Image (cartoon, rainbow, N blue to C red; front, top):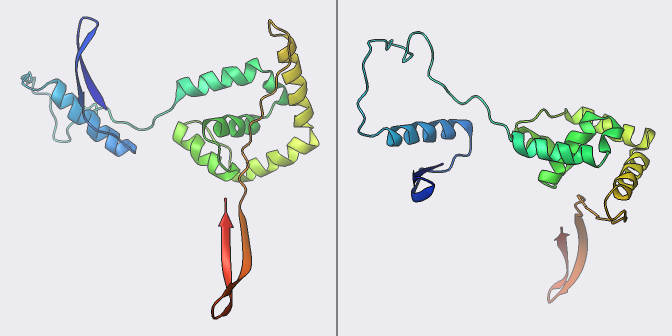
Length: 190
Protein backbone atom coordinates (compact mmCIF):
# COMPACT_ATOMS: atom_id res chain seq x y z
CA UNK A 1 0.00 0.00 0.00
CA UNK A 2 1.32 3.43 -0.90
CA UNK A 3 0.26 7.02 -0.42
CA UNK A 4 0.95 9.07 -3.53
CA UNK A 5 1.27 12.84 -3.14
CA UNK A 6 0.44 14.85 -6.25
CA UNK A 7 0.52 18.47 -7.16
CA UNK A 8 -1.78 18.80 -10.12
CA UNK A 9 -0.94 15.79 -12.29
CA UNK A 10 2.67 15.57 -11.13
CA UNK A 11 3.70 13.04 -8.49
CA UNK A 12 5.75 14.84 -5.85
CA UNK A 13 6.18 12.01 -3.37
CA UNK A 14 5.35 8.40 -2.58
CA UNK A 15 5.17 6.92 0.90
CA UNK A 16 5.27 3.15 1.13
CA UNK A 17 3.01 1.99 3.98
CA UNK A 18 3.58 -1.76 3.63
CA UNK A 19 2.43 -4.95 1.90
CA UNK A 20 -0.51 -7.10 2.91
CA UNK A 21 -0.77 -10.85 2.55
CA UNK A 22 -4.30 -11.27 3.86
CA UNK A 23 -7.44 -9.26 4.60
CA UNK A 24 -6.47 -8.56 8.21
CA UNK A 25 -3.12 -7.07 7.21
CA UNK A 26 -4.84 -5.03 4.48
CA UNK A 27 -7.32 -3.62 6.99
CA UNK A 28 -4.46 -2.63 9.32
CA UNK A 29 -2.55 -0.96 6.47
CA UNK A 30 -5.68 0.90 5.35
CA UNK A 31 -6.16 2.25 8.88
CA UNK A 32 -2.49 3.30 9.07
CA UNK A 33 -2.82 5.00 5.68
CA UNK A 34 -6.03 6.74 6.76
CA UNK A 35 -4.28 8.05 9.90
CA UNK A 36 -1.29 9.29 7.88
CA UNK A 37 -3.54 10.99 5.34
CA UNK A 38 -5.42 12.82 8.08
CA UNK A 39 -2.45 13.48 10.41
CA UNK A 40 -2.76 16.81 12.19
CA UNK A 41 -6.42 17.24 11.33
CA UNK A 42 -8.76 17.68 14.23
CA UNK A 43 -11.89 15.57 14.56
CA UNK A 44 -15.21 17.33 14.82
CA UNK A 45 -16.84 15.71 17.84
CA UNK A 46 -20.54 15.49 17.16
CA UNK A 47 -21.12 13.31 20.20
CA UNK A 48 -22.27 10.39 18.06
CA UNK A 49 -19.56 7.92 19.05
CA UNK A 50 -20.92 4.83 20.81
CA UNK A 51 -19.03 2.46 23.14
CA UNK A 52 -18.78 -0.20 20.41
CA UNK A 53 -16.81 2.17 18.16
CA UNK A 54 -19.64 2.76 15.70
CA UNK A 55 -21.14 6.06 14.73
CA UNK A 56 -24.92 6.28 15.01
CA UNK A 57 -25.19 2.50 15.06
CA UNK A 58 -23.28 2.06 11.77
CA UNK A 59 -20.07 0.05 11.99
CA UNK A 60 -16.85 1.36 10.49
CA UNK A 61 -16.12 -0.12 7.07
CA UNK A 62 -13.98 -3.25 7.03
CA UNK A 63 -12.57 -5.46 4.34
CA UNK A 64 -14.62 -8.64 4.01
CA UNK A 65 -13.21 -9.83 0.70
CA UNK A 66 -11.29 -8.86 -2.37
CA UNK A 67 -11.71 -9.76 -6.01
CA UNK A 68 -9.55 -9.33 -9.09
CA UNK A 69 -12.57 -8.27 -11.13
CA UNK A 70 -10.76 -6.44 -13.93
CA UNK A 71 -8.37 -9.35 -14.55
CA UNK A 72 -11.25 -11.84 -14.49
CA UNK A 73 -13.35 -9.70 -16.87
CA UNK A 74 -10.46 -9.33 -19.35
CA UNK A 75 -9.75 -13.07 -19.32
CA UNK A 76 -13.46 -13.86 -19.65
CA UNK A 77 -13.77 -11.49 -22.62
CA UNK A 78 -10.81 -13.18 -24.34
CA UNK A 79 -12.36 -16.60 -23.64
CA UNK A 80 -15.61 -15.39 -25.23
CA UNK A 81 -13.85 -13.70 -28.17
CA UNK A 82 -12.06 -16.96 -28.99
CA UNK A 83 -15.43 -18.71 -29.08
CA UNK A 84 -14.68 -21.02 -26.17
CA UNK A 85 -18.11 -20.34 -24.67
CA UNK A 86 -19.31 -23.00 -27.16
CA UNK A 87 -18.18 -25.60 -24.61
CA UNK A 88 -20.86 -24.31 -22.23
CA UNK A 89 -19.17 -25.50 -19.03
CA UNK A 90 -18.51 -22.95 -16.25
CA UNK A 91 -16.21 -25.31 -14.33
CA UNK A 92 -14.10 -25.78 -17.46
CA UNK A 93 -13.92 -22.02 -18.02
CA UNK A 94 -12.89 -21.40 -14.41
CA UNK A 95 -10.17 -24.06 -14.63
CA UNK A 96 -8.84 -22.72 -17.96
CA UNK A 97 -8.76 -19.09 -16.84
CA UNK A 98 -7.32 -19.95 -13.43
CA UNK A 99 -4.49 -21.88 -15.09
CA UNK A 100 -3.78 -18.95 -17.41
CA UNK A 101 -3.29 -16.78 -14.31
CA UNK A 102 -1.05 -19.35 -12.64
CA UNK A 103 -0.13 -22.61 -14.38
CA UNK A 104 -0.51 -25.18 -11.63
CA UNK A 105 -2.25 -28.47 -10.94
CA UNK A 106 -5.99 -28.84 -11.30
CA UNK A 107 -6.43 -29.09 -7.54
CA UNK A 108 -4.19 -26.08 -6.84
CA UNK A 109 -6.07 -24.04 -9.45
CA UNK A 110 -8.94 -23.93 -6.94
CA UNK A 111 -6.59 -22.02 -4.60
CA UNK A 112 -5.74 -19.60 -7.43
CA UNK A 113 -9.43 -19.00 -8.07
CA UNK A 114 -10.04 -18.39 -4.36
CA UNK A 115 -7.16 -15.88 -4.28
CA UNK A 116 -8.69 -14.10 -7.26
CA UNK A 117 -11.96 -13.93 -5.35
CA UNK A 118 -13.99 -15.66 -8.05
CA UNK A 119 -16.36 -18.60 -7.60
CA UNK A 120 -14.49 -21.88 -7.81
CA UNK A 121 -15.94 -25.32 -8.50
CA UNK A 122 -15.32 -28.07 -5.99
CA UNK A 123 -12.55 -30.59 -6.67
CA UNK A 124 -15.22 -33.25 -7.23
CA UNK A 125 -16.84 -31.01 -9.86
CA UNK A 126 -13.47 -30.56 -11.57
CA UNK A 127 -13.02 -34.32 -11.88
CA UNK A 128 -16.59 -34.73 -13.20
CA UNK A 129 -15.83 -31.96 -15.69
CA UNK A 130 -12.78 -33.89 -16.91
CA UNK A 131 -15.03 -36.81 -17.79
CA UNK A 132 -17.35 -34.41 -19.66
CA UNK A 133 -14.34 -33.14 -21.67
CA UNK A 134 -14.02 -36.57 -23.24
CA UNK A 135 -17.74 -37.38 -23.49
CA UNK A 136 -18.67 -34.09 -25.16
CA UNK A 137 -15.48 -33.73 -27.25
CA UNK A 138 -14.35 -30.38 -25.81
CA UNK A 139 -11.14 -30.76 -27.81
CA UNK A 140 -13.08 -30.77 -31.08
CA UNK A 141 -15.32 -27.88 -29.99
CA UNK A 142 -12.30 -25.78 -29.02
CA UNK A 143 -10.41 -26.63 -32.21
CA UNK A 144 -13.43 -25.56 -34.27
CA UNK A 145 -13.74 -22.33 -32.27
CA UNK A 146 -10.03 -21.57 -32.72
CA UNK A 147 -10.20 -22.17 -36.46
CA UNK A 148 -13.28 -19.94 -36.76
CA UNK A 149 -11.56 -17.20 -34.75
CA UNK A 150 -8.40 -17.36 -36.84
CA UNK A 151 -10.37 -17.30 -40.09
CA UNK A 152 -12.20 -14.20 -38.82
CA UNK A 153 -9.01 -12.21 -38.14
CA UNK A 154 -7.99 -9.47 -40.60
CA UNK A 155 -5.14 -11.57 -41.97
CA UNK A 156 -7.35 -14.65 -42.04
CA UNK A 157 -4.37 -16.83 -41.23
CA UNK A 158 -4.17 -19.64 -38.77
CA UNK A 159 -1.48 -19.50 -36.12
CA UNK A 160 -0.78 -21.91 -33.32
CA UNK A 161 0.27 -21.28 -29.74
CA UNK A 162 0.97 -24.24 -27.50
CA UNK A 163 0.45 -23.75 -23.79
CA UNK A 164 1.54 -26.59 -21.56
CA UNK A 165 0.34 -26.86 -17.95
CA UNK A 166 1.74 -30.29 -17.30
CA UNK A 167 4.24 -30.97 -14.60
CA UNK A 168 6.61 -33.88 -15.02
CA UNK A 169 7.99 -35.50 -11.91
CA UNK A 170 10.26 -38.52 -11.98
CA UNK A 171 11.61 -40.53 -9.09
CA UNK A 172 14.00 -43.36 -9.80
CA UNK A 173 15.96 -45.62 -7.57
CA UNK A 174 19.44 -46.36 -8.81
CA UNK A 175 22.32 -48.35 -7.51
CA UNK A 176 25.65 -46.56 -7.38
CA UNK A 177 29.04 -48.19 -7.02
CA UNK A 178 30.86 -46.86 -3.95
CA UNK A 179 34.16 -47.75 -2.35
CA UNK A 180 32.30 -49.89 0.20
CA UNK A 181 30.16 -51.71 -2.30
CA UNK A 182 26.80 -50.90 -3.91
CA UNK A 183 24.53 -48.22 -2.34
CA UNK A 184 21.03 -47.17 -3.38
CA UNK A 185 20.53 -43.56 -4.45
CA UNK A 186 17.30 -41.65 -5.00
CA UNK A 187 17.13 -39.35 -8.02
CA UNK A 188 14.37 -36.74 -8.28
CA UNK A 189 13.82 -34.54 -11.32
CA UNK A 190 11.03 -32.10 -11.96
